[in-house]
Length: 112
Image 1 (cartoon, rainbow, N blue to C red):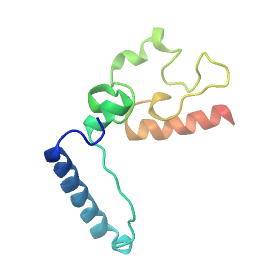
Image 2 (cartoon, helix red, strand yellow; image 1 turned 180 degrees about the vertical axis):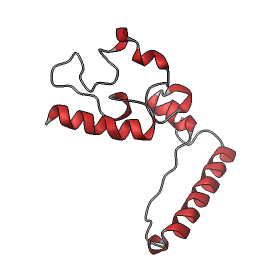
Image 3 (cartoon, one colour; image 1 turned 60 degrees about the vertical axis):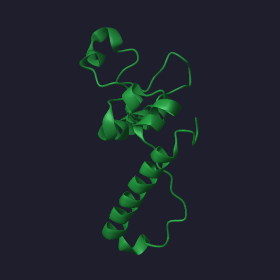
């Protein structure tokens, strides 16, 4: 469904992107005029391409059950049952930005 969601949706995305770029230029004025390409995804984009939970972009669904001992083979670990295959980011540790950051560090420490 790439670019087949209607003109209203595309206009919404363009307005949102312009607003975000204006914030960027206000915050970091030296980049004004230097952005050559931008693209914007919405929760609908995340759900379409990543099959993410409710369009979330930070990995697995937040649920306290991930800490249940029966889940320890796949949660809060970069290791998988496939030799040499590791997870990184929020799927290796915890959801959200900080979880993704620490998940990357955890994965790198196991691999290296």
